[in-house]
Length: 73
Image (cartoon, rainbow, N blue to C red; front, top):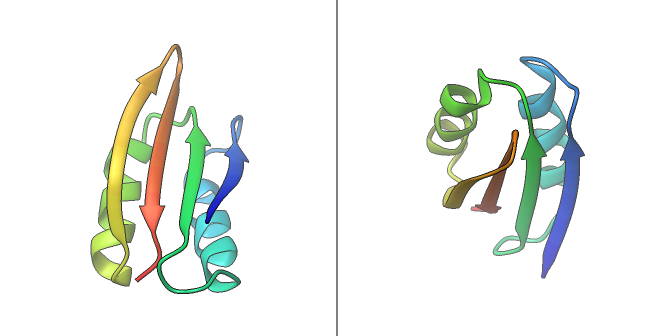
């Protein structure tokens, strides 16, 4: 199951904090798609995933936004 989190307009560390909170409520294996426009997310999101045991499935640019797909570990 895929869930969405709109973190547009939020600056570091809020996108990661909101992703962490949202992932806590999901079942293992669920996917969270996070949309960000914070330039620091390029560093923060992959680091968060590796440190938290989640799998970063995809990261891509869409205009000025970045789309992150994270599978809960």
